[in-house]
Length: 172
Image (cartoon, rainbow, N blue to C red; front, top):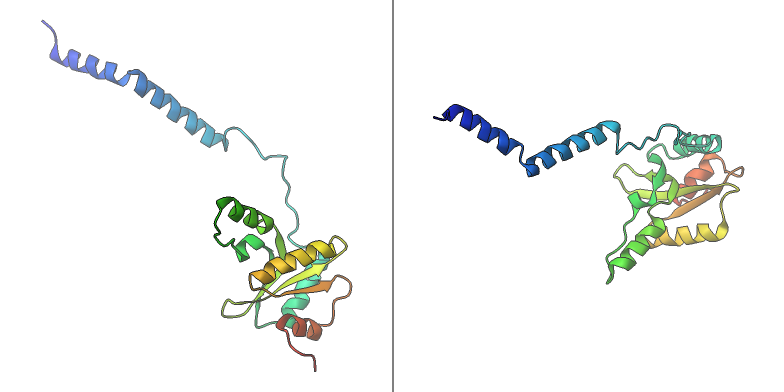
């Protein structure tokens, strides 16, 4: 005579050890280990390093810019991808091509009024800037409706001049 309790326990155990369930449990265990290790065992330790958000020259200019337009908010190092989007065209490939031309580029400073409207994009041009590339960037941001104001590092006007240029005012 067979024991109904033992049969039920044995049947449950064999169901738990079925190949699909064993594979599922092993898969979950592997995923848990990988997640605990931080992305499949890859470590960024020793491969990345913090850097200052602004150079000393950019920081000095930021203070002047903030003094020039105290009624505005100034953002630094803003991705063009946060400011613009590619307009859907006839072709997904073209859309991605347009987006890729600006999405990883950075604007030095974005000046925004108290209503959240971008007043100007401000670039501080140093020796690393190239006139041809800058003109292309400016035409791209102008096509999106932005006005770019450029200052040359080392030749920045006084606060009143910065204000006039950024707010597009005539100097008295």
